[in-house]
Image 1 (cartoon, rainbow, N blue to C red):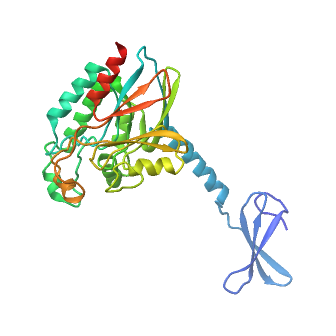
Image 2: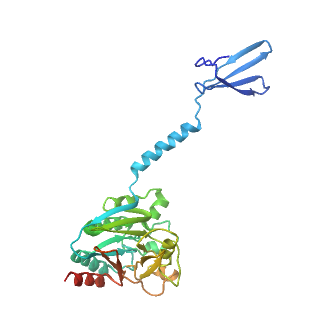
Image 3: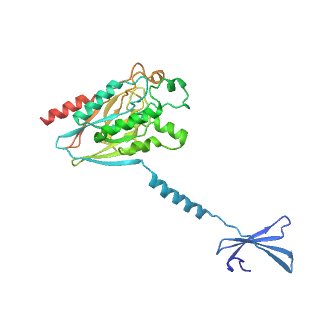
Length: 330
């Protein structure tokens, strides 16, 4: 017997089919099409041809691979970024900033204005750690948070794009946050805010690593908005947990909990510095109800990172780090 489509004799007998099991089905291995043979009597057969387009698993994996290629081209985020800074000074000042919450009622806007001017006047490099916007939407579980916003979501997006463009010369990278990105993803399935930020600076979607080379000194900076754990006794527990679980890095940065802190510790015979950023949303009632007593702290710790040797010094605030840098330059 031959295939009625291509004439091949390479057939696979699929067995008896039909209500009375009087049909025998075959698949052609050459053209991958099916046809049936109806057995009327032992001495007579009637050929029934049914043309079918068969989709196999290889076709679907080919489609999946094509989607992977397209989505990779569409992707705007990174897990690692390489940055090189050449300086004539002994090192640079690096300030991680998280949880600004632009648009919120309890935000210290005057402090943000002063810090922005200070960054530009004193050549301070910054990394944004997420939650730049308050961005409460109608699907949030607490309606009072939505009504307490001073700026609506559209106004907040315009504000942050303008602010990031102003500080762009000092902005090394930015990361994911659970306010704007997460809420847009839950509504639309698309991280439109992350795409906007990625047009201004490298965007790390989730946990990411910055390979920062200052002159010839290479530092690995690991950032993660929420860290990987929380302890009421140690604000940098999440950073310690990441370093302990063999995530290689010299500096670990986290945010989210609105409590500024820094720590030095040794992991696998290697010195590590961890920073937990503060917040500019100092009078956030939602946070005070859940995990914070009193107003939040805007004094996010900063780092002085040496250019002539492998060493990182944490400071309680950016002013102290700048003062140390300037004294070394004298």
